Amino acid sequence: MENLTIRLEPEKDYRAVEELTREAFWNVYKPGADEHYFIHMIHICFASIIALITLQIQSITPKNANQYVI
Image 1 (tube, helix red, strand yellow):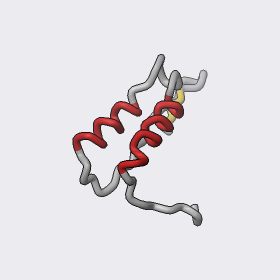
Image 2 (cartoon, helix red, strand yellow; image 1 turned 120 degrees about the horizontal axis):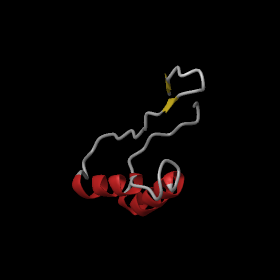
Image 3 (cartoon, one colour; image 1 turned 135 degrees about the vertical axis):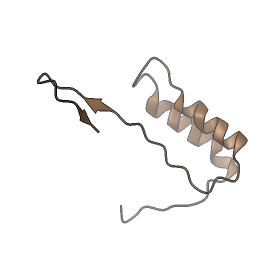
């Protein structure tokens, strides 16, 4: 994490970000993906967002039936 750079996302990067997001989530949680479209709509509707962090909460239920949120 020491080499993490936070920067503004220039408009020229929009398509690359959307494609990277689509590839990262394609057929992972369901057939196809919606995450890239969500980011596309953010680019269109909220051009002045200061920060955006995307995450997805998942849970694991092993055979012993105790559910763990990750």
